Length: 190
Image (cartoon, rainbow, N blue to C red):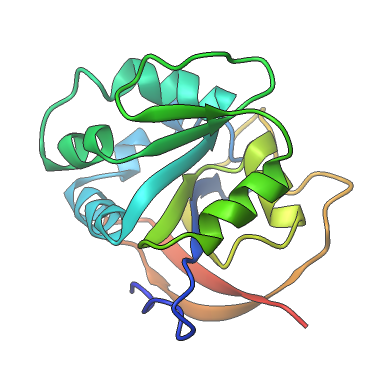
C-alpha cells in the first residue's frame, strides 16, 4: 500500500529497507535476493515513481553508483534520471548522473529539501545516514520489507543512541513475493 501525499502539501521523507528476521539491515544483496522477485520489483518501482529525489549516505551511493548506471529497464531508467543527493563529509564529487554531494549538517540540508516543492523524497536502507535522519525526526514514513532469513553477522537496524521515536502502524501484510512481509509505519510526532 502506498500512502497518499501529506495533507499539508509538504514533501514527505520515505525510508524503505530490507530487514532480516533478526533485525539486520546491512548487505541485503547477500541475503535478500532469492526473495526479492517480480512482485517486489513492481512495488518498488511504484513507490519510487511517487518520489522525485533519492537521498543517500556515502555507503549506499558507492553501492548504487556501481550497480545502477549500467542497468536498464523501467526502474533503472527512473532511478538514473531522477535527482540524487549523497550526504557525505568525505566525498567531494559524484560521477553518477544527476547526483549532488551535500556536505555539512545533514538534518539542516534534509529539512531544506523537505521544505522545497516537489514529490516525496526516498531513502533506501538504514545505515549511518538513515539512522541520522530518523533520529532527527525527519522520516515521515518507514517501510520495512521483512525477509525470512536469520543473518549471522551484520549491522542491526536499531543501534544504541537512537531517538526512541514512536511510530504508528499504517499497513501490514504479506509482501509482494512469497515469504516476505511488509510493514509500513508513519512517524508519530508529538
